[in-house]
Image (cartoon, rainbow, N blue to C red; front, side):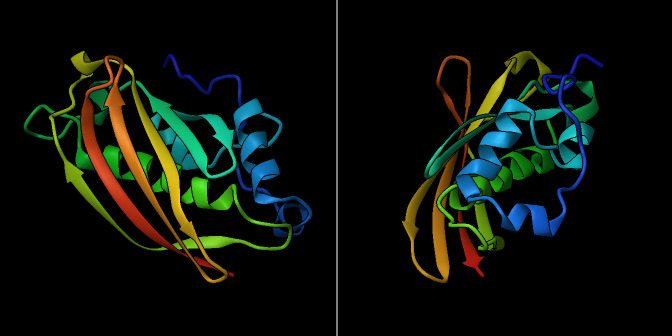
Length: 158
């Protein structure tokens, strides 16, 4: 498998170590490879490629392993990319000792994705970050910038 994330490790960071860093430090560690990506990133072959406060980009190249019975990329890949980029965008705004989790998200599929689509990017951007709730949106685009899917999320901050 030719993975974007072959050079990175996969696993789970201990909660006490994660509590020692800000959300932006955590997400930047995923980007530069100093922290492990989650194991679903290895399973679905995606990578966290950009991070700044309130904005995170996740990238993948859909392949035959992502197809549904109709021959297009399964919506679960798109959902995972959106959940990841939007959740990590919220995470990137958190101070040390805080964490977040997805309460709900909604996806609209705009165009079909196939292996011929080529590389795709999911960009998550924070819309609002309160003390207990964060709201973000995500856009999945192809290499030509065409919108393939759009999503929104609400995250609990704790």
